Image (cartoon, rainbow, N blue to C red; front, side):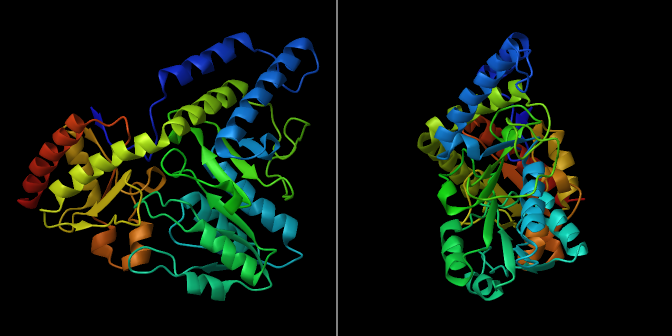
Length: 373
């Protein structure tokens, strides 16, 4: 089976899995316990946190461990809204966001918050002038993803922060950086809050983190707080935390080389697929790891199921919305034909040229067979 769905999830690296197994076996103490086994676990967790902080360019005490990016997103959005509602109840996002962000914004709207969506330009970029006009003295939060998960659009977070500082310095900027980590250079100095998930970077499922600038306070989503988890209650998942730490170190240490590898594979894909009567949705504003196209005459789900029989795994939209039309493309194009026939091919530096060649052969076969039906 050829796997080309790395944006949905990634396989766990052997060295990362080994760390998980070793910590599970050798560190049985609860990091919240005061006995010797607990102290050993707490020391290991601190070591892992300091390694993550070094890789991300932040302080170790700015890290909040969660069950994944969806929880991190909910913690950031709800935490800010509940803490700062006295300042105002206006929040801003875009239709390029992951479902976990969009659904949380809908929930906050039901609780009396006014939600504004930044306009999207035809090329998929955010309308910065519109964003500037939307920000007012009541705006307490803006949430914009660093990289869109369906098409791969990158957001100019530095520019967004500059606009915030110009219009309302008290507005807090959150970014879902789940699809950015290990794919592009990131700078946490550009945001106040940022969400990450381990399973997108060759580490286990069930662990994520929320970066929170140390001078920022938010209300916790999960109570039962301790010294080790002042913003998220619960027993620290030490084996997951340590393996996540190793995964972050591995994915960030050869970043430039890995990006170049993916660019070459992306160019190979693009050169071959542009000859078909399809619409390429990913452009030069997108990261090379995500390649989205609309088949126009063939439904997304039909194509994905057909090519799976050829031993190829790709996806339609995101894993969380796999049987729905693309919310990203619907927002950009307002064209149902484009948004219901899109497929996402997501590649990795572990993807080989041979795998791309086999995919292209399978694509040609399935595409032409389905056109005749």
